[in-house]
Amino acid sequence: MSSANTPVLIGVSQILQRITDPGLGKEPLAMMLDAVTQAAEDAGNVGLLSEIESVRVIRGIWRYQNPAQYIAEQLGLVGIETMGTPMGGNSVQSAVNQSALEISRGEKSLIVLTGAENGNSQAKARKAGVDLSVTETPGKYSRMLAKDVVMSSEGEIKRGLRSPILVYPIFENALRYQRGESIDAHLQRISEMWAGFSDIATGNPNAWLQEPTDAATIRTASAKNRMISFPYPKLMNSNNAVDMGAALIMCSVTKARQLGIEESKWVYPWVGTDAHDTYFLSNRDNLYSSPAIRIAGTRALELAGLGVDELDLVDVYSCFPAAVQVAANELKLDYKKPLTITGGLTFGGGPLNNYVMHSIARMVELLREQNASKGLITANGGYLTKHAFGIYSAQPPEFDFKHQNVQPEVDATPTREAVDEHEGQVTIESYTVMFDANGPATGHAALLLPDGRRTWGYVEDRDLALEMTRVEFCGKSAALDSNGIFKVG
View (cartoon, rainbow, N blue to C red):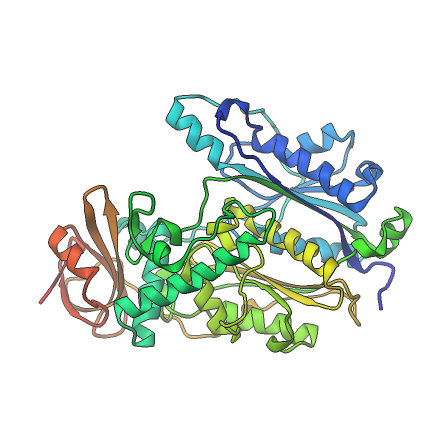
């Protein structure tokens, strides 16, 4: 059952730009424009481009000011709305949620979302000493999806906790300790999980890495798979060195019919939810769970009237193995079933904030083939911070599009006090070790004071850093000095 304003996805596209000469590649702006045109071709009506009412662009690491306006002008659209988003891998699903709401209310009837990154071209250009040309797109968006927020406290910044490659392995080691696993058993388990993601990528025509990679290769450090941060070698990190673009076209059922879009192309967003965990990592109750994922993800299923076992397709946001495990644990997903439809951000490709546009595009492709199936998309921004969820099907829902922001419920869950500095005894809650060309270099740790408050510390002793990769340090007592350096034993 659908009403006149029921939102429906009618066109999707994905672009992979594989080049050897960085000077020959298209910049992200051109990739976005191509993706929008190809999404209209996918819908079966390129003429629909002239009726777009809003162009919405997912924030990238590029320096464009208003790429949406440029895209609109190139399509001959005058005076239409342009929208941008803040940073964050949740932005695509959140933008879909907002777009679906506006269509269901009759405020918009035809919206396009797009985004692109050229990390592969940029990497090749840096290596070759080439400056890539960038189109200037001056001006401001008509509106923003949301504001950028600060997600690192002064104490975290002071101790160097400003990088996902440092923070996510701290989550990972907390998960290992909470499960009571040995370092070796844990590494084997997560490498096998990641090998399963690689297997899915081999069947995804738009995956960046389509050659199968086995678990032993994934977990073993090598010249091509250098250690980044304990316990993650390169193949357990998001692969941002990709040139990838995508676009989604969404409209009302009435508009789809007016445009003559075949119903075999239609995929319905049934429900959407949004929430965030504490913006500062220091204030999380623990480092192995996520109240926002649990509450917002569970609410999405409740709104859709589905049990988790009724999901046929799932794509869990997968910047690092820890992100997948926390989400799967909170939502009680079955690890024996595929947790990705793309191959994830390592193998499917990780175009930063725009990854989820690729996962939604892939979901649309699969749901068109599997008409009765239901699919769940999860999205994550920051340090397991900002979360968005969507449930999709080629079958029309029995209700109007539903959306909830469950932030008040998340805010009511336990948090932890933190201090920026401390001198005295602490307990290591979790940690990681950052590697350089010479091996383990620095250790970083979340530390609990005797009264339960959290602070952060580090070590620069290479011998100690090496030992931290071989012996479980979670739960150990340590002494922290006023400079943030901790000693064990």
